[in-house]
Image (cartoon, rainbow, N blue to C red; front, side, top):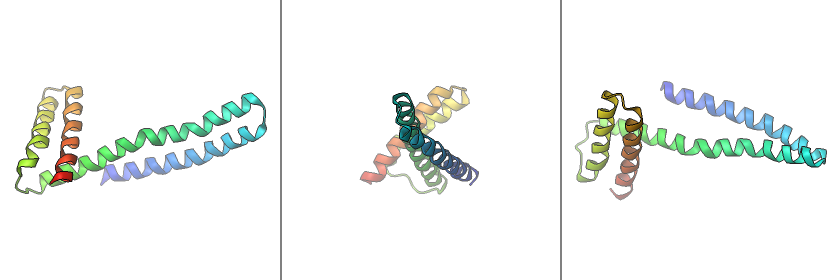
Length: 121
């Protein structure tokens, strides 16, 4: 629940920032001088780039949360679950070894495999 609240707060802050900075970018574009127009275009594009970078992270967090909830539910694993559960076990082994990079790599692989299993299963 805390993670979800944090995500919502960050999205609200990003939305406020996007509107505020976007309005200033539009004002710079309306100025008409070449330097101001170029700066205005950059200012308007910045929030769009930020949103484009955040969407995959939000989807990863959402699907990772669903994957972990399914794991905690105690449902009998099917044959389609072997891949993502194996990746999750490897992620846990990396966490124990304090290999953060390996943990993240295996966790992302587990989420991708979970998505595939849900699409085909």
